[in-house]
Amino acid sequence: MAAHHLEHLRTFLTAYRAGSVSDAARLLGISQPTASGHVRALESELGYALFDRTPAGVVATARAATLAQQAARHLDALEDLVELSGEGSAVVHVGGAAELVGEVLAPRLPELVAAAGGPLRLHLGMADELLEDLRRGDLDAVVSSVRPRVQGLSGAPVADEEFVLVGAPRWAQETGDDEGTVGALERIPVVAYAENLPIVRRYWRSVFGHRPDAVTTAAVVPDLRAVRAAVVAGAGLSVLPRYLVREQLAVGSLVELHRPEVAPLNTLYVVTRSGRLEASRSLRDLAAVIARITAAGV
Image 1 (cartoon, rainbow, N blue to C red):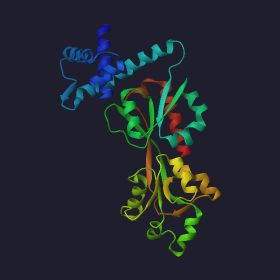
Image 2: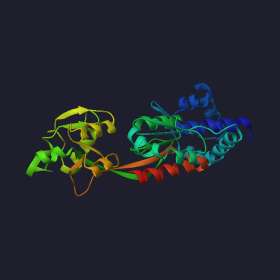
Image 3: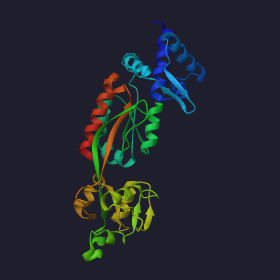
Image 4: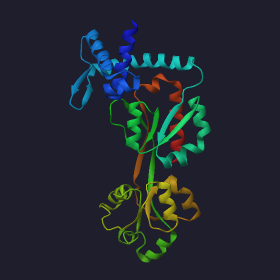
């Protein structure tokens, strides 16, 4: 195959994974017109359309999906060969929520670095933002609490994090005979992660069948570890992942203020760009270690 055909395939595959020709151009370091020209030339060579153009961008055709699957393993293998033949190892970028990275992944960093086979960079952020960075090619893998639903990303479920409603022991004592009832709980101030009480609201709807409209918010702290610290200090109740409060529950600085028959769960995924795990053994090994550590840690 001529060199320009390989270049056109590379541009197509990048656009397919990114869901955008302009994003593909940025990732490849070429102009948007050049990237569009590569795709049009490949379509002309193949004799069929690869993308349907819409006002919102490009949508891959069924034939494009088949071509991407066929081409990915070969093009990715070539890129990996080039990386392996160069000096040093490529840096691997992994994203996740701050509390998950800090409490679960960072303590096992030597294992992660060994699996990556080279330098590792950990990135913190919200799931949607990290998945967008992954789609654009800025990250190699993400541990996400959101299931990926965009073209070009693939996620495997690795663990279910359990949410528990906790507070300092004083709140259990003050509720007396009403301990654990929704009425008693709604008299305790809430320390929330965000203004709209996303985790508390989900717990209330799942366990009690209604929104937490009667609760009073004492504080909003956009970091679950800081929420934990505030709750330990007696600022109010909150709903937190069990792995984040396991130690505090064990020593008694926090107690479960309510124990439902079925605790709310949230599935965590290890997400990569489609086709990358099949093409890269080091990324495949790293994803497997991330999955094992996450499953054991939460």
